[in-house]
Image (tube, rainbow over all chains, first blue to last red; front, side, top):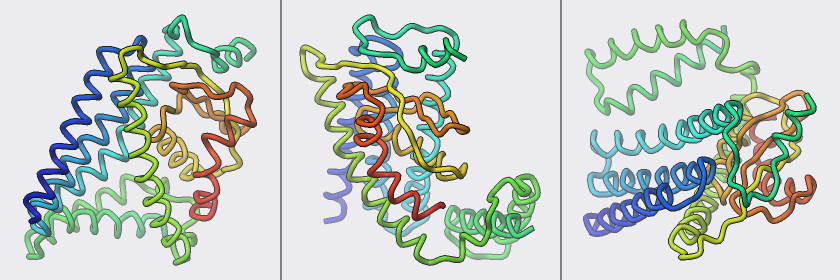
Length: 110
Length: 164
C-alpha cells in the first residue's frame, strides 16, 4: 500500500520537474524562467522526497529524504532571489511585453 | 548567550534526526559539531530568545505550514498551466507591495513564502520603509494597495502572530 502511494508521489514529482524544465525552455525572459524553475522544480523535487519517505517509513533513508525536502524549501527561494536581484542590478531587461517595472522606477529615483 | 544555547539545541536535534541512531559515536560527533556551529553562529541566530517560550507561536507555525503547502499546490498548477498552454498566457511585471512586518526572521519567511506561491517571487526588500519588490507572472493590478491585498496579506496575518 505505502509502496503505491509513494510511487504516486514520485511520479507527480517527476511530472512537475518536467513541467519546470519545459517552462525553462518556453518562457520568454530570465525572470519568468526563474518563476518556472523555482516553483515547479522545488515542488517536484519535494514530491519525490516525500514519496521516498512514504516508501521507506521512519528509517534512516526516509528521514533523510524528508530533511532534504525541508532544506530545499528553505534554500531554493533564497537562490532565486539572489539571481533575480543580481540580474536586475546588472541591467538585465524585462521581456518587452511586461506590464510595469516599479523596481526600475524606484532605483532611478534613488 | 541564550541565542547560542538555542542554536546549539536546534543543531543537535537536526543532527540526531539526520543520523537517526543514538549511539555514543554519533552523539559525540554531533555534540562537537553543534558546539562548533553555535560558536560560529554566535548571537546572530535570534535577537529575542524569549519568543521561543510561547507555545501559541508553534501552533500558528503548524497552521502556517498547512496554508503554505496548499498555496504551493495551487501555485504549481497555475504555473504548469501557463507553461503547457500553447499561447503562454503571461503578463509579467514587477510590482511594489507594502508590509507591516519588522523583524528580520519574519521578513525572510514572508519573502520565501511569496517566492514559493502563485506566480510571484521577491526581488528585493526595502527594510526601512517596509516595501517588497515582487516579480509577478500575471499582473492583476499595478496599484500598491490592491497588490498588497492579493499577494501579502494572507501570509502577513499569520506571520505576525508567529514572529512579532
